[in-house]
Length: 133
Image 1 (spheres, rainbow, N blue to C red):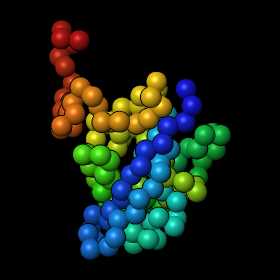
Image 2 (tube, one colour):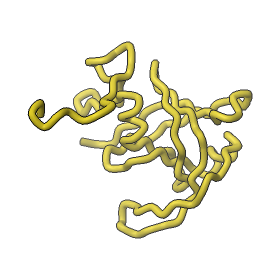
Image 3 (cartoon, helix red, strand yellow):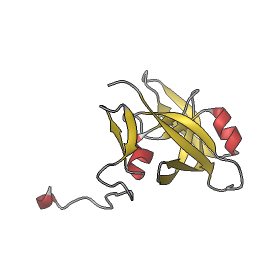
C-alpha cells in the first residue's frame, strides 16, 4: 500500500499568538496518537502534561513526554489532541484522523477529507443498538 503523508498545521491551543508549524506527517492507521519530534514541541512551546509509556513498531516500550494541547488542522478540518514526543518526523495516528473524519485513499496515495462528508466532520457519539448492527 505504501506510505501516505498529510500536510498538517499544528498550533499550540493555549498560545494562539505563536506561529503555527506545518509538518508532513506520516499517516499511520496502525498508530493511535499524534507523535511529533522534539523540535516541533519546542517551536510550539508545548507544555509537558505527563509521561506516557508507549509501544513502538519493534515491540519495545519507551517512556515519552505527552505534551499539549495541540490544535491539528488539515484542509477544512481541525481537532485538539495531546502529542507524544518521539522520533524525527510527525506521525498522524487514528485518533486525530477519526476526530477530523479523514480517510486514506490508497488508489490516490493520499490522505483526504472523507468524500462522504466533504463539508463537516461526521462522527459516532454512541454505538448502535445490537439489533441495528
